[in-house]
Length: 242
Image 1 (cartoon, rainbow, N blue to C red):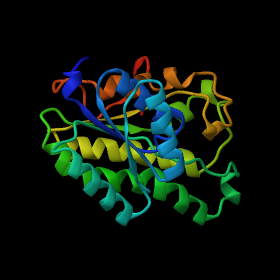
Image 2: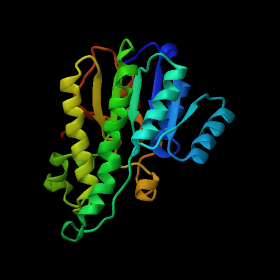
Image 3: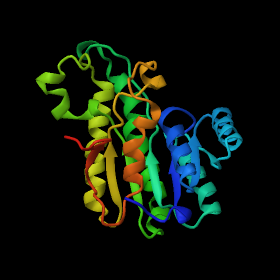
Image 4: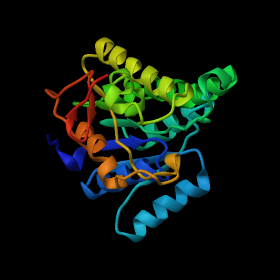
């Protein structure tokens, strides 16, 4: 699954650390032009500087995906630097309090949905014109196996995690959004990925996978041809159940 790496431009949200930063590093290593988006300016510029020290180039784009204004400003900045975008990786996301469902305030869901679901919609809709200006546009939605109803309801996975509402529901919604965008936009390859249980800040680095392993599916789906899959859910081993 390869494309012309030298001509490829990619924007990764939530990219100052964890999976996003590792995806940026890998794309830069592939020779792609990389826009590293993050809401924290200090952390974002530090990430770009550290990549540069390793001989890798990335361009920082300040973006708070919960703000319409911030997303518009990010679009203006990227549009001033490139006429098209080949790949959008909607990676930015947050966790949610691990409270039992019956003890979870509705407001807690609002916070996590605003980032994990509405944020992906804001960014996708804003950057569609740049994507559609490319020859083989791709969108990767970074989801989670926690959003897979098939996985969560599998008796073999009963001890995978305690029942909670916010994070699993937000990722299940992101999966549905992925499928609907793919149906509505056949000219763009749009897929969701499950990074797997990866050691990041989101789980206090308890995951058993490295961030490189966690970005395998992201990189694979970002690098598909125009004849590649769309409207699917994948992990590093291939298709995975919704």
